[in-house]
Length: 268
Image 1 (cartoon, rainbow, N blue to C red):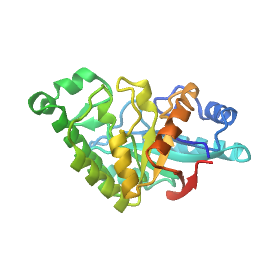
Image 2 (image 1 turned 135 degrees about the vertical axis):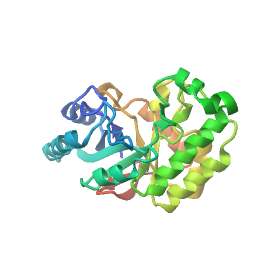
Image 3 (image 1 turned 90 degrees about the horizontal axis):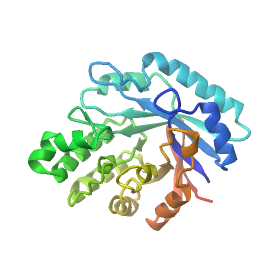
């Protein structure tokens, strides 16, 4: 079953419309897609410029529902969101997420100590933790935040669990922290996103790493897959590479969602 559960539209930082994505998805043979635009709300209630906010959300949800109905005989379209976990934003995030009936909610960490980790390699290198203690220590701090995100219970999917590797950093440690996060994911009945986005970035690697994937499979953590598309050209980016990778890691099923409940299905 060909699915893509990570797609950004013009409602956040994507450059293609929902309509365009649906047409491209049908052409590429997808059976199911999910729109997952960014919801990045800081503890003070402000939203990132590219993000959905409380004003945009009504239009986003309404448009997604209309598109889903329009294409229901050709393509299953799910309503999702990629929500950022930032320490201190729990109360407002819970309120916003609880105001809509999403099919799936991706929980991601893009900010560590106020730094957007995927905006600039130099900013990461200048972060105090990296300068004083090295990347492994920064990686541990990042995984701690991923674990806190999982513990909130707000999310169904962990987005690109090791995004912090984006600039070509490969941790030499972190095994224990990775296992703790995966155990929490399993306990919370969540699933792990496997993403081809990293193949378009300096790390040139699928997220998560083979080390994480093998442990996730061993623990019985379910997965879903997505390309983190920001344009229709990216909707099936390295899709065959992605499916080969998850099978190589030991997986034979992927996860689909409906109203935040998941079902595992075979690839075929």
